[in-house]
Length: 176
Image (cartoon, rainbow, N blue to C red; front, side, top):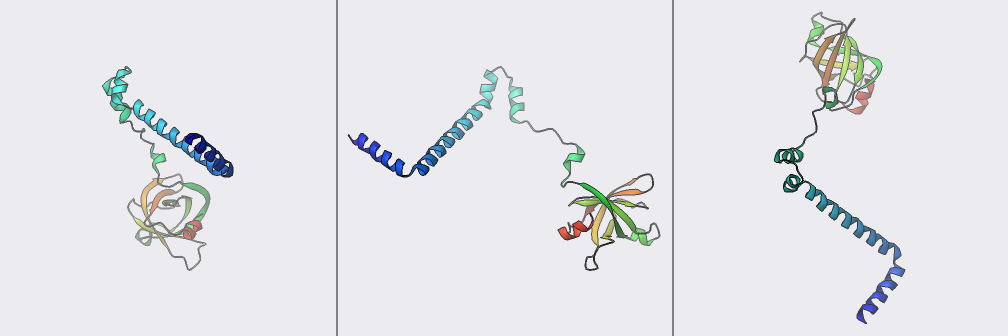
């Protein structure tokens, strides 16, 4: 009789609190599913079970210590490069002060990590260059970049540059 009274009381409470009861049942089912799924996955990765299934010990070790393949150089970038309309920039460096170039160029593509510049003169990798968009307001100063690569194109040199410190977003937008 105690069980029948308890069942009657539960039925009455459930009728009055249907959303709470349904939510509790769904939460309980999800929890049970996750526990069962975790237990089954751990059983599949057990090396003794792999050996019993016909896999060698070496295969079991490889399965447990698998790592994804190396990504190509282009995929290892820390930030996404984006192309756009070329933006004219002023460059300031000791290289240009010695008469090796005219100190201006164009931003070919840009990212939060750096810029690719097109200039008329070569700049050796490792050189620190100050860059400022021509159309930037007078309140915006030069941004320091470090030349990481310099490649000769047909009419110009492409400089792969990394920001010394990532500038604020409003300054990045000035480069296109």
